Image (tube, rainbow, N blue to C red; front, side):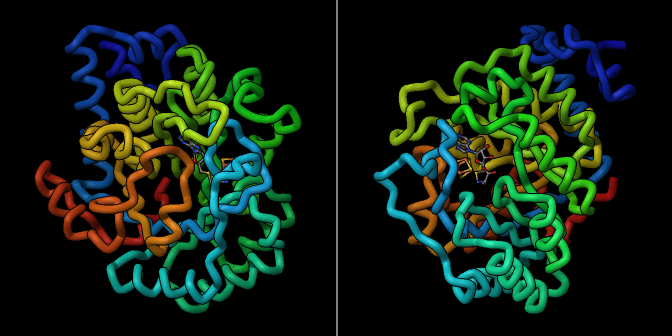
Length: 344
Ligand code: SAH
Ligand code: SF4
C-alpha cells in the first residue's frame, strides 16, 4: 500500500508522509495522487460541478491584512457598496441563469451592522426561498452570526488563512489572532452553518511544514467546504514584490484535501484560474467540485481587487455559463444547477 492508498483509506498520514506527497518527485506517486482524488470526487459527485454566484457587495474594509488589496491602508482603491436593490437584482439575474446559491462576500464593512445585514439577508431569503445564502463577511460576534443565521443565511466562508500562529502574525497586524479566527469558525459551526474554511498557498513566509498544521486544523474542524488558492500579490499592498503561490502546491493540496474529506465542497478558486489559464481544469482534475462565477455588476468587479489580475470575465463571469460549461465538457464534466448542500 502506498501513501495515496493509505490516505484514501485512513484519511490521515503522519507529517512526514504528508510532506512526501507534497514534495515527491516520483511521477507515479504524483499521478496516483491526482487520479485517486479525481476518482473520489467522481464517486461522490459524479461529473457534476456545482455553481455558486459570487456577489462582491462591498469593498470597504476596516481590516488591514497585509496581503489584501481591500485593506484599509490602501488609499488607491475607489470604494463602493451595492444597494440592497442592486444585490437583489444580481440574485434575480443569477436565478434566471440557474444559480441556487448566492455568496455575499465583502470586506469587514462597519456600515453593515447586524440590523442592516439581517435586513438584506431576510430580503434575499423571502425573494429566493429555494436558494442557499452563503455569507463571507469576516469576523463577527457569536450573536451577530446567530442573528444572520436566524435571518436566513445557511453557509459561511471564513478562511483561517494559515494555521501557524507565527505565520498568521506575519500576514496580519499585531492585534489580530489566529485563535480569534478559529473561535469564529467553531462559533459558526455551533450555530448550525455549513462552514467553509481554507488558506492561501504560497503566502509570504509560508513553509511547507505549515501545511501540515493547516491539514490538521481542517481535519479537526471537519468543515463542509474548503477553499484554497494561491497567494497572488497586489501592487497596493506591502506584499507587492512577493512571488505568487505555486500551481503545483495548490493542486497537490487540493488532491490531499479531497482524499481527507471525500464529501466536502471544494472550489476550483478564482485565484487558481487567475494564476494559470488551465488552473480551473487542473483544480477539478485534482478533485475540486465547485466553481464560483462572478455575479457582481461589472463596475464593482473592477474595484474588488483582492490581488492583481483577478479574472472576472469570460468563463469566470456568471453571464458566460455556457462558455464555462463547454470548457468543462471538453474534459468530461458539466455544470449542475443543484443547490449542492453538504451531505457529510
Ligand atoms: N473579508 C472577508 C472576505 C473577503 S476576502 C475575509 O477576509 O474573510 C476573501 C479571501 O480572499 C480571504 O480569505 C483570502 O484568503 C483571499 N485573499 C485576499 N487577498 C489575497 C491575495 N492577495 N491572494 C490570494 N488570496 C487572497
Ligand atoms: Fe478585509 Fe478580508 Fe481583505 Fe482582510 S482579507 S483586508 S478582512 S477583505
